[in-house]
Amino acid sequence: MVKKSVPEWLNYWSSNPSPEMEDRVLRYSTKSSSTTTTIANESPIEETPPIPEPPPPPQQKKQEEEEEEQNSIQQEEDNDDYRRNNSTSSVSAEEISRQSQLLAELSRKVINMLELRRLASQGIPDGAGIRSTVWKLLLGYLPVDRGHWAIELAKKRAQYKHFIEELLVNPSEITRKMERSGRHETDESKLEEKGFLPRSEIPQGEHPLSLGKTSIWNQFFQDTEIIEQIDRDVMRTHPDMHFFSGDSALAKSNQEALRRILIIFAKLNPGIRYVQGMNEVLAPLFYVFRNDPDEGNAVSAEADTFFCFVELLSGFRDHFCQQLDNSVVGIRSTITKMSQLLKEHDEELWRHLEITTKVNPQFYAFRWITLLLTQEFNFADSLHIWDTLLSDPEGPQETLLRVCCAMLILIRRRLLAGDFTSNLKLLQHYPSSNITHLLYVADKLRARSVG
Figure 1 (cartoon, rainbow, N blue to C red):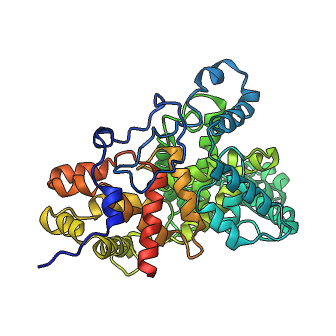
Figure 2: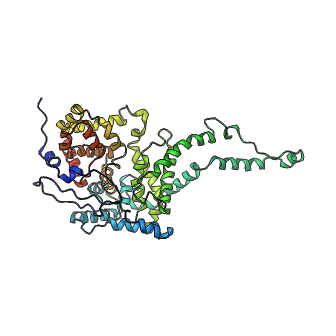
Figure 3: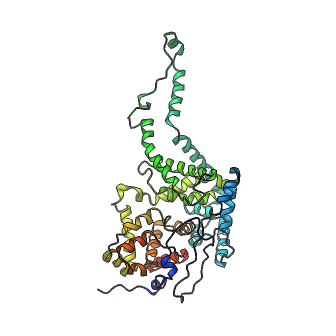
């Protein structure tokens, strides 16, 4: 059988990796280098594009400050650190130009979404502090007319406050209210004359021992298991970032915000409720919105994150529903699409992985797809990838599958030389890569598919 030839541009991006790339496996820790990834303008003549050190977690240098400073000013210091760490002195002329274009687009009375998506897909410069606003527009949370922003935000934030008041109330509070109401309707004086203590009548359905499906107590006990799982996952969210983890007031406040969002989502979506890993998809949204340089937006980050999280998951919700795993909209179907995409663009690699070494793509792609690549790259690089994912007007999934396919192509030389064990280990611990190059290859796959 004649193997499908690999295009020259694929060989360029995937062959002859440097020894550094061969040995480096993604290990995201607070001890990583403090250098920031710069966009390289490599010439196509080069044999191997250089792979700079990945940028550090924006909060890694704040541990001592958070221990010494008062809790009341921790958030402000965190915002300053975020802006400082993401403002590199070696920003390329291309980034400066794109930042100016994005700021100009955001200043329009009516946003041109086509242009905004084009600019954002190339990466949103961190230093401008505009990622928060751009993501809200890309997710449809903000209307294109700037004149409607204030009204829409006030309405959504008030709605979220109502959700908290309505859905996070302990049943005992409801019972006490009913008791107080019942006492007003009882002739307490007559009861006391007969030697009885006054007592309200609690409907059978609201009794703590009731097993009725509509019982608030029965529902409360059913929710307890999910809430315990949410608590465990929230505590494990990015343990190496002080923004999410630790004993500081800032970290605990942020953990509580994540917890409330996930509980409310679970209660409003009984068909899905909470699935382990949702916390990882939620984290980038909350981080970006909470670090908005506009204090008013930062304070309301929890409400904004909730609605954007709902919108983001609307395109992936079927991946979290186990009953749909084998359906045409389930996660297995999506993984099959990724496999077919690889076969279309690099049949030799596809055949080696799935036929020769029998590496089932579910062993690695399940996490890649359901968690939107948040676990495969360091946090700063994940945000860059999300800029591109959220910019797709047809939704993130198609772009996500192309990025996954590009990830395989970038390490094809190592995969073709590996067996089942080595390849599975490599794919489950993806090596650090230059994100700009990765997204370039993914975009090439789109161009070839269209062509």
